[in-house]
Image (cartoon, rainbow, N blue to C red; front, side, top):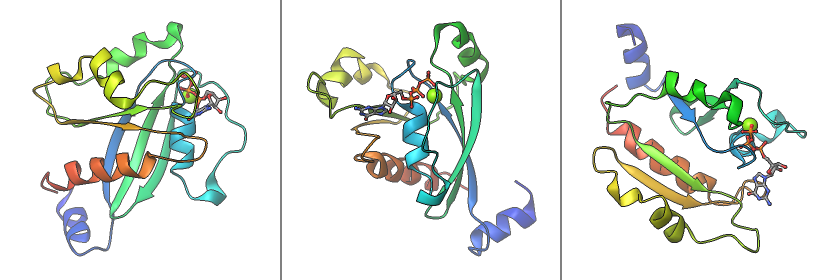
Length: 153
Ligand SMILES: Nc1nc2c(ncn2[C@@H]2O[C@H](COP(=O)(O)OP(=O)(O)OP(=O)(O)O)[C@@H](O)[C@H]2O)c(=O)[nH]1
Ligand SMILES: [Mg+2]
């Protein structure tokens, strides 16, 4: 970020830009989550499986998010490696989505199944969500914002 951009962010004239990588199995609801975070007039009514990846944008509070929405389908998973930044202390937000389904397990159980407590080198957080109704999404984004805002602009 250039000096002028930094100054604009500090003065509140411009939103700080952040890049987010969205990964997860196919059909888990990634695109639906991102879509629901957009203003209602920008939301798509017809979400199709993502081919390759798509770049989506939304704003929240003082941040401007650019999200790389990766396909979860098996044949595209090798794309994930190109974007995965192993050694940086990037925050990781997990959505335990589709919590409205009758056989959904709790976010605590998901966290145990994925052994999230083993992640010691990055801040992480898990939220239960229902992307159709939009439940749990803002809690996750608020956590992400807190993490990002503690990093210097
Ligand atoms: N019941 C329920 N259905 C959901 C939820 N979130 C998404 N869906 C549905 O799940 C299906 C897949 O959603 P997508 O957002 O396309 O999933 P995706 O993870 O982006 O899939 P890929 O792009 O193929 O990786 C759609 O029919 C959504 O309507 C949820 O929280 N609850
Ligand atoms: Mg998708």
